[in-house]
Length: 125
Image (cartoon, rainbow, N blue to C red; front, side, top):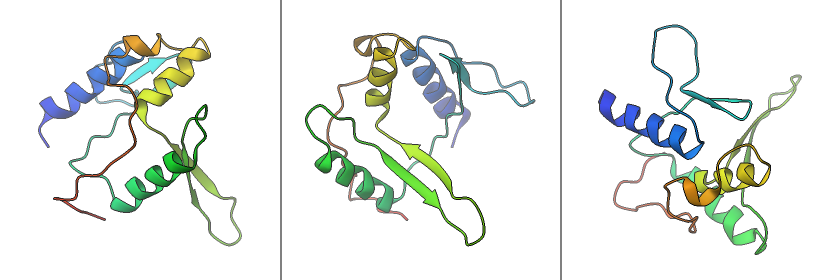
């Protein structure tokens, strides 16, 4: 993936969060910071089908006034589970905007949240 693509994604995310992209200076720093959160933006040509399926299920099961989210858990016997939260980015921006931690959702420059769909012409795991 070329640098222009991932840098553009980092800029778009930063703008949506009401901040700016931090330069890559070769030492550990996030791609942007906003509202007490340090963000790392990871850009891929495709995300796993099972993840899109889990997100679609969460959206189907969410009520009209609920935000859909998927919790991924890595469970190994004898260790505390490690968990990650996944949600549609526009929904996240709207959620943190409601908590006073980001600009209003209409200022994020993204389309309103729609049911998650995955293109079927390029399936990957």
